Length: 240
Image: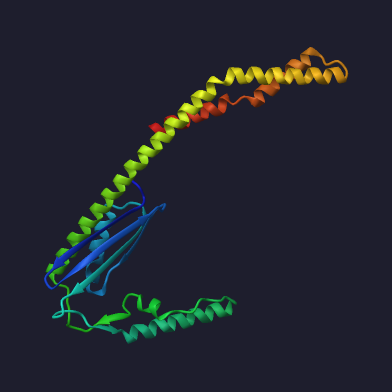
């Protein structure tokens, strides 16, 4: 058993810089992978996704990669004006459509636009993806995902112990409740008979056969043995 929540990070170094990879996951019915790869490592994205999906089969995963380069080869950030024009045109079109449907949208922020992939460009020729960078980042991704999977396994083992203790407690309570069934049945039956006796003294005489039928019906309705049997089945399934 492995937990659906997990976290791991890993830092790698290569000639001229370093990169830090981070993964966070929460529960999800299927696999929802959000991988944010800087433009410098965009060519590695298919291989990085393949590395992740070999291990992750379900859950909502957020994987981020950050890097830094030494001054002599560092990328000079610049705004991709062509991309900005496309984004702003898209935002304007969306706002027009929303207005036509009488919908109010929150105003766009510059920080949100800058976070869009491709908006922040880099000076051409200043930094390029080298084989050394590629190998380091791919190895780091493999190591990080392995660490993430081990973290999930450790948390899963802890959850198993907690659930196991709870199952034992439930089983003990079911056994205790089952032991009380005969006494409970006798008390219910006697209480019902006493109530009928009180009523018969106030009204016309009640036939004994009718009393027996009513007592039997009442006991059946109050019987919890079937519910305890269901709990036993659930406990057995949980222990399997």
